[in-house]
Structure formats: C-alpha cells, structure tokens
Image (tube, rainbow over all chains, first blue to last red; front, top):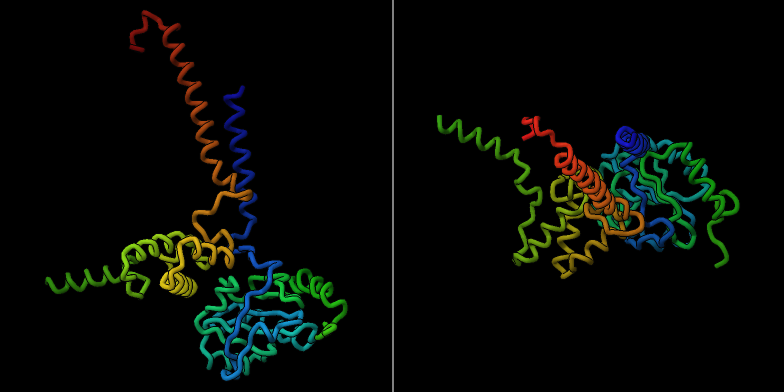
Length: 184
Length: 144
C-alpha cells in the first residue's frame, strides 16, 4: 500500500508547490526599506543643475518619489497617469531621473508634460542603489516623518493607485489634498 | 588562409563572456581582488535574476560592481558589503541566503530529503539481504 501511496503523495505535494509557483511573480522583490526611514540623498536638479534636490525637500511631506528614465518603456506607459495625479495635486510628486541623459529627459518632460515638483538627476545611479532601485518605473510613497510607506515596482495604474496608494495617503493626511505643513 | 582563420578566431573570442564585463583594472592587492571576485560572483543581479553581477552587463550590475569596488577600495570588509547590499535589496540579492526563520526550509530540505533517501535505501537493502539469505532457492542458480 505504502509503496503506491508514497510516490503519489510526493507528486501531489510537489505539484502543489509548482502550481503555487506559477502564479507568483519572481520579479517582485519586496523592499527591505518598507517601514524604515527613507535613505538620505542630495542630487542636482534635472531642470536646474545648480540647485539641489534632496531629503530636506521631502521633509514633513507625504510625497511620491517616482523613479523614471527616458529609456524606460514602462515610464512612458505610466506618465499620463502621473500627469493626471499631479493635476489632482493630492500629494506632491518628486522624480528621480535614473541613469539618463539630461537633454533627453528635459525633452521628455516638455513633450509629455511634467508631473514632478522637481526631479533629481541621478546620472551614475548611486542614489538609486541606496534606495534599492532595480527596475524603473518604481514609485515610493513617503510618510511625513520620512518613512517609506509603500513601494510599487512596475508602471503605476489606476487600480494600484486606488487600492494601494490612496488608502495609505488618506490615512496619513486625513483629508485630500494632503495638507502640506502640519504643526511646525 | 591563415589570416581568415585568425579573423574567425578573433570573432569567436570577442563573443566570449569571459572577456571581462568589468572594464576596471583589478585591484593591485591579489587578496583583495580574490575577495572582490568571489563576492561579485555571489551577488544576484536583480534585473536579470539568474545572473550574478559578475556575469551580467546590465547597467545596474555595473553600478553595483562599481559601488562594491569603491567600498572595498576604502577598506570595507566582505561582511560590510553584504550588509550594505541586503539593507537595500533584501536577502534575495544574495545567492547564498543566510540561515534564518524564512529560509530554514530552504537550507533544511536537502538534509531532510537525503535522510528520507537513506532511510528508504537502508530498508530496501535490509529486506533484500534477509531475503537472499532465507529465501535462497538452492536450485535457482541464476541468483548466483
């Protein structure tokens, strides 16, 4: 009896694992940054290389940090939605322009619209490494106290925005648009 | 004739992945270079997940190699580099993940399966041994 049941049992267990594996996404790697303070950074601005954009600019704000580049197809895909979100102005959107060409990036913003309050220009990808970025587009949601609330890897969609971002933003801000300064 | 062979050879060699993806010169200290090579062969490239950053020519892999090289040049140890990477990319970045609550099954499974295999093997062996001693048919010469 055992002789026949054992192989079948092993097969069923393995098949169970494989079946589960089919519906998992190996490209989704959870960020160890979630719930932790966002990494400090300071970079030249894309539009104004003389000025810098960094952690100080994000301080005290519930904000999005969107990692984008002109070589990134998914970024083009989500760009329209970002422009829309910027118009709604619920939370400020900051950009991290990752390993890109300044001219190309500026051209992209002028032709497709600029949803960003400002974009940091990370030519060498050093800040991106600190943020654990591995595949643009990536979108971080940052809390007022500077912790990383959520990270979405892949183009942003309305569904993801509604199910993952909005509830967290509402919880942080109380009301929308998010009040920019609280207390002081 | 020989020249065309040489050209062909050159073409083939130019395709070889062994020609360092890493354009940087090696560390002057051979110990440091060995540690560096061993390390980049254990770090996963998250863009092309089945390659190490030593194998991959993805831009992120080259950025990570540059970062690791820089850290090691400044005297960071292997452990410090690994800590740096795990803090940013998680354990998945390591091809050799640490033994912890989420990975005990991963590390334990081979031992467990080997134990089952050994158990089954010994049982079969015992059964056969007793069988061959007790049930040996003196007329059946084929067994011998």
